[in-house]
Amino acid sequence: MTSRAQAEQLWANIRELGTRRLIALGFIGLAVFLVVGLGAYYLSRPQQEPLYTGLTREDVSRMGAVLKDAGIPFDVSADGTSVLVNYGNTARARMLLAEKGLPQSANSGYELFNDLGSLGLTSFMQEVTRVRALEGELARTIQTMSGIKAARVHIVLPDRGSFRREEQPASASVVIRTETADSVTPARAIRHLVAAAIPGMNIEKVTVLNTDGTLVLAGDDAASAATGRMANLERTVSLEIQDNIRKTLVPYLGLSNFEVSVAARLNTDRTRTNETIYDPESRVERSVRTIRETEVSQNSNNQNPATVQQNLPNEQVQANGGEVSSEDNQRREEVTNYEISSKTVETVRDGYRVERLSVAVLVNRERLASLAGEGANDAAIDQQIREIEQLVASAAGTVADRGDQIKVSSVSFIADSRNLEPVPPIGIGELLVRQSGNFINAATILVVALLVIWFGLKPAVAAILARPPAEETQVAAAAGDPALLPGSEVPQLAAPAEGGNLIEELTIRMNQSPQRRLEQMVEFSEEQAAAILKQWLYQEDAA
Image (cartoon, rainbow, N blue to C red):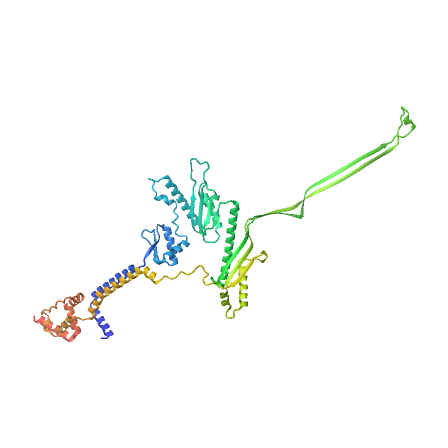
């Protein structure tokens, strides 16, 4: 029998089952597929492990948004305090969340007092809880600043003693992780914040560090503090210039075909300039002084004559001779004072100035040769090096008069010179061990599906395709045997053999109804069925 004939027979047998039986079989098949599908889904789900526990709702929502954007499937526990991810995505998810500064609920604040009871709580426990709460609140506030990914605060409060003359001052240490290279600017604000939040703390007692171990700001003496700020500033400027150069050369050479080193020398001296400018063209009379002098003098010179009478006693000689003179002098002096306009300018420079830049760039020679093409020679490579020097000078902002130096060299890079190497792939053995649970679940689902098909669907299909011999005997007897006429007894079927199929037995019993026998007789021969019906009518009229 061909496949087409089998298909037609199967379709005819299915139509003979009736509407109710087809609906019942449809519901049974749908239920079987649903049970198998749900079992396969829940059993084939990858094993999940907790990523973080004891989280707040805010952290759970933030972490869920980050994981969703990254395409990492996750789940939340029933109590809403834990985040679960697949076994293979745990390390990736933690690195991604750590980059975003999550979770933030690790810094517990004043909510610590909600879980504490007053009964049996010592003063030491109260003080420790207070310090923890204060550290957590400060860490939360610092993390809200722009550019701060994570922060942790350590506070040392003064220990009060009864026999201590001087009280120990409070101190604090803050460890931060910033998004940019500039960590000095937020460190100043952090020092003021911590000093203002703790009673009796001086700003010089707050130390700010970076996660890479760099001392950002500390309360040392003025000399060491200035030296530290100078070193941090030079490092920040060098990193910024390196970033600018990398952004310029990456599209041209590629990320792994060059190395950049920048050394910046800065001048942070504070300069104050006082300048006074006079304008001689602008004159204004301030005061006028006038002096007038008049001098009148008379001079007379009387001389006695030298005679004999002068030698005689009691003789008076009259002197009528002599000189008389008079002088009349007048002087006038006028002094005018003018006010000359002036302008005083005071300039204060409190920043930094780049004194000198030294830039060194190493370029992979093979990359330059590949860019030059087949006809690559030393002249073509030198031309490319000059172009790279111009690009570096423009990106770094060098000034020739300032004494800046730029050196670009082409060398052959060593194959294993990179510190960052790709992680080797997971071996087959480790992969099988990690996925052993999934393999077991899949095998279980496959076995269950095979058992359902073998013991359930296969007998049902066989019963539909194969017409039982008892049915054919009944059809033939109904066509020619008068024993099957109305009033005669229907022969009983033999009992099913031991080990017979229950589905086949039920199918045979359902097919023994009078209506079903009449339908089979009509399908077998319409003429014989009409004759039987006529005979039935005659018998009823005679009765």
